[in-house]
Length: 67
Image 1 (cartoon, rainbow, N blue to C red):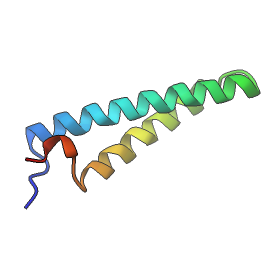
Image 2 (cartoon, rainbow, N blue to C red; image 1 turned 120 degrees about the vertical axis):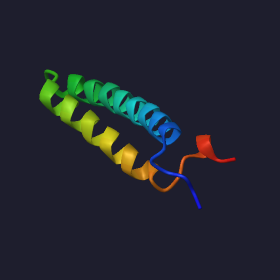
Image 3 (cartoon, rainbow, N blue to C red; image 1 turned 60 degrees about the horizontal axis):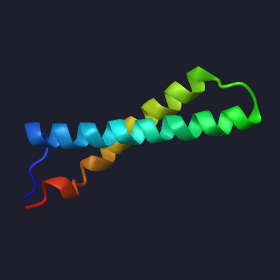
Image 4 (cartoon, one colour; image 1 turned 180 degrees about the horizontal axis):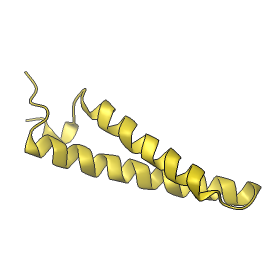
């Protein structure tokens, strides 16, 4: 049985979620900058949603923690 919600899981899932949120923010800034002025509320909410979705996806398993 996979161990989830341990200290190691939260650390690995958190790092993965932060990376995903940062990548999404950079992509959102690039796209909105090409269309019009950057809407920081949209960038922030999109990045936050991506981070939450990454955490939820991590429940299925994290390759970093596979033994």
